[in-house]
Length: 152
Length: 152
DNA sequence: CATGAAAAGGCCAGCCA
DNA sequence: TGGCTGGCCTTTTCATG
View 1 (cartoon, each protein chain N blue to C red):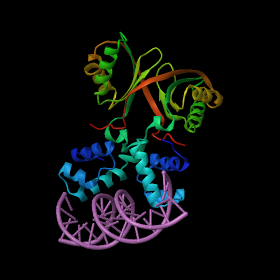
View 2 (view 1 turned 180 degrees about the vertical axis):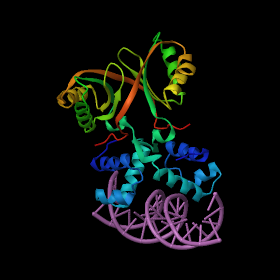
View 3 (view 1 turned 135 degrees about the vertical axis):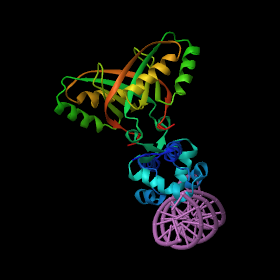
View 4 (view 1 turned 90 degrees about the vertical axis):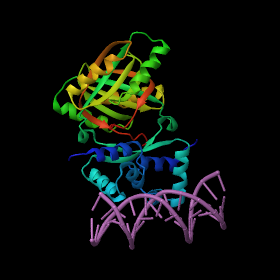
């Protein structure tokens, strides 16, 4: 799908605030309400807009502690990788899991209440997974920037 | 603010799909439409729900390349840190910046088109910032899991 | 891509437990 | 305080030119 400047402008607004009405967007873009509506529908159909979500402040729901957990596996057979990925995906504390290059195989972003909850997570969930060779935790001191906006 | 089970249930739905109507939520929660409406308004007022956004598929807008960039600064004086943080926040390619513990001071999540764009970013943007002692790039091979949902 | 009309949902009173 | 009922009004949605 080709995305022109008007599509980008629409995406730009929606990635910041999806509650913006078609009328507001139409004003800012110089289009009619229907034109905006149809472009948005198309962007949804084509999967450019994957979903609409409410972002929840972790601080407000007792998830103040964010840890990046680097993980090295013992082997790199496809079967072991997929098994690990499937299990890790099922953990609700893990909000992100990246297969990466470098010294470690995976980086997990883990969100919990506090250090104690993290310890609990490590002991009861993570280390019960098989084939983990080693882990290294990086603790977040401060969230300097965090955004879901990817279009300028 | 105290958040009860009904609030959590509402948050649970909205964090997955903010287009869900109050009526649908009211059915699932056994509340009236207005009760749901007022709870949501309160959650917004109190900042539990920080914003509503459209999530855009990076693949579809030519941002297939995600890199974690670890950064070490030469000094840790407050002035230098805040200066660095401010500058890095202004970079659109940086969608996340964490101040962390460990060998490095910061971890940046950088989203660009490809390796070439990343090189360009490093040369023209990142390394022009002062007080950077060293960097280490970790490339994403695969996004195993990524979610904005933090409530079970 | 614009117009205009029908349908749906958000929103706000006033009322009740 | 927190929830319900009923109705206005904005917005979405879609048929048509």
